[in-house]
Image (cartoon, rainbow, N blue to C red; front, side):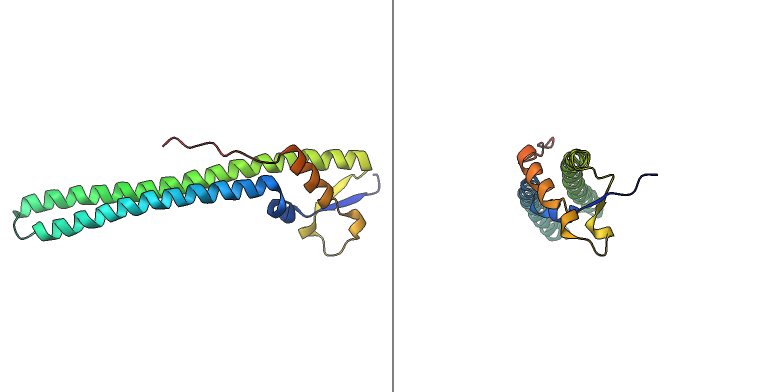
Length: 158
C-alpha cells in the first residue's frame, strides 16, 4: 500500500463562507418570510372565522353549528397541511442546493488532490491536530467561488 499523503478541508467553513452558500441562505430566508406572511394571513382569516362561528353558536341550530364547525376544522387542517408543505419545500430546496455545492466541492478537492499528489483528504472536523500546510480550505473556497458564485433555488409550484 502507498503511504498516505494527507490533506485537510474545513467543510463547515466552506459552507459558511462560500458565495454560493450565502446565496442559498439568502434565497431560503426570503422564501421563508414570504411563506410566513402567507400563513399569517390565512391564520388571521381562520381566527376571524372562529370568532364569527362563536358568535353564531347561539342563533344556529345544533346541526347547522356542527356543520359550520366541521367546515372550519377542515379549513384549519388545510392551513396546517400548507404549513407542513411549505416547510418540506424549504427543506427540499435547501438540500438540493447544498448538494450542488457539495458535488462541486468534491470535484475541486479531487482535482487538487490529483494535482498535488494527495491520496487522502479528510474533513478538519475529523482531525485533532494538523499542519496548516495540509489545509486546502482556502484553495477550495476560492475555486468554488469562481466556479459556482451562486446557486439558484427554483421557484416551487405555488
